[in-house]
Length: 392
Ligand SMILES: Nc1ncnc2c1ncn2[C@@H]1O[C@H](COP(=O)(O)OP(=O)(O)OP(=O)(O)O)[C@@H](O)[C@H]1O
Ligand SMILES: [Mg+2]
Image (cartoon, rainbow, N blue to C red; front, side, top):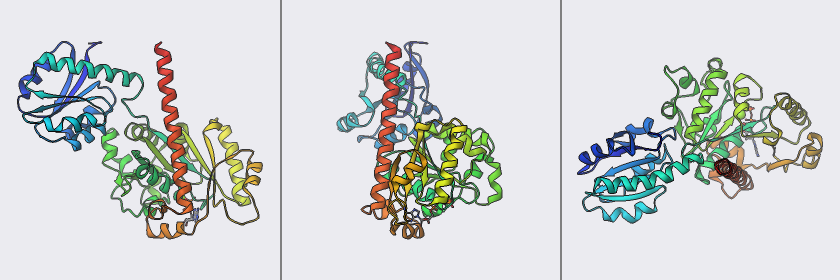
């Protein structure tokens, strides 16, 4: 079946049964399976292995919710089969993200197979470019000092990535003993990372989805354990698996951390694409950031992945950003101003980037999120260029 097209079918409509049987036994198709309901199809759709998803609908209007649900799991082209008077959905469907074709039933099997072959060709190309499965970017926010603004930065950045930049984003609170990301976001989660890693069975995308809490911005949150003593059950191995699974489900994973290089943190660093190293305008923090840079070098962490972030950059405390750069022998990538809206927003449990979008702090976070999104797009482009080169 090397050249056959791998397809999965969801939904139902009039006249589908006979066509489905014909497609399932067609020699040019590798018909993986079908499910009447998209929600039940999640495990089959995920993983980037399909070249086409066929969705059948008896509705006369465009099934936007179901197409979006399919898109949650796969980037494969979608072919819509509709029955009856469904021509009204045609234009909207063809404008939708990733809908390759719409066929009104009844149709000859060969016509359907022809449309699937066309869509399958595009699906193969996407796969070759690595576009069918997600490979989320891991952005770790770290500082060796408490109170530097890690959680403020991680929560505001996560909210901005989800709300302003349309990213499927997860905030992972790896301050395992005293994490407060959920509080800063004003959410009261029922489940935490502790519940996830101690739950029986293999961890996969579907299971992860059952343990996250959605913030109003669209950001998913996996909070720290409720009790400090539960932290030790979040082992390095569990965390490594969790990050691999999260990468398949999200465009970006923002990790908030504690000021230590513990086992789970090392597992995170191994997978980190961008390390936002937070620094402040004070000598003790500077000394510890310098030590952290040395530790990162010993750990062979790629220096080009480290982005120095100066928080409270405008504070008048007798030290200038240039002096920080000189002391750390590294350029500051982003500056975040000190802003009184931040403690107010923290106490309200609503990220400033959402509640006070015009404030200087919010503009700075938003533009930092934008440049991380641009870096992600550039990395993806490079990957697809390299894939093209290796094919030619
Ligand atoms: N840019 C800023 N402007 C004003 N206040 C800030 C700013 N950044 C952080 N803060 C304040 O500093 C406090 C500490 O920040 P935060 O909790 O994010 O630090 P942290 O590095 O996560 O600390 P910990 O290591 O203890 O988790 C916050 O409650 C917030 O009010
Ligand atoms: Mg914190």
